[in-house]
Length: 181
Image 1 (cartoon, rainbow, N blue to C red):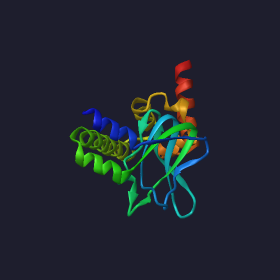
Image 2 (cartoon, helix red, strand yellow; image 1 turned 60 degrees about the vertical axis):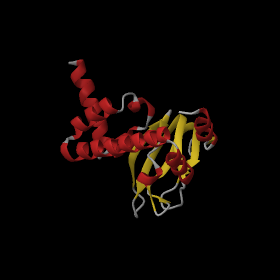
Image 3 (cartoon, rainbow, N blue to C red; image 1 turned 90 degrees about the vertical axis):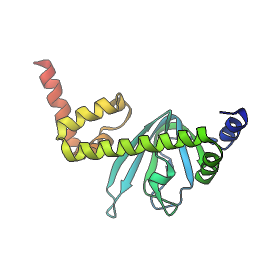
Image 4 (cartoon, rainbow, N blue to C red; image 1 turned 45 degrees about the vertical axis):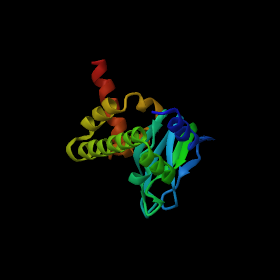
């Protein structure tokens, strides 16, 4: 990538420290940004009309949060992105990224790769929820998200896996009992 392109790309991002408990995006509200968690942790959640939240994504820095096109409709966020541990977050207006993508093939390839990865993650999770039982879902999670059991709360993990926190606790307890035998 040319130095001028790299400079334009880097300059388009703003970096902000976001404290644990704050929100980067709120479901139903405008969110014109792309987000990168440089350090720290966040989760994406969807809340239904009765206030029940379901975790649909984990973000442990450094990582790119699902692209704006995949998590917004008509400019409004489909998810809330909550910071679970103090985070350093880079943000860029999604229109600025589109302009940079049109002007630079390497940036376009990078952004398209991120979008393809996000699609693959969503399909993998859908397959897991549709095809696997609780123990196999947990095994899938551990394989695809190593160390995340240490980084994120078990109620969030249970929600992501489509099981109750009690079921997750029982699955983990059964594994410990089996390991002791």
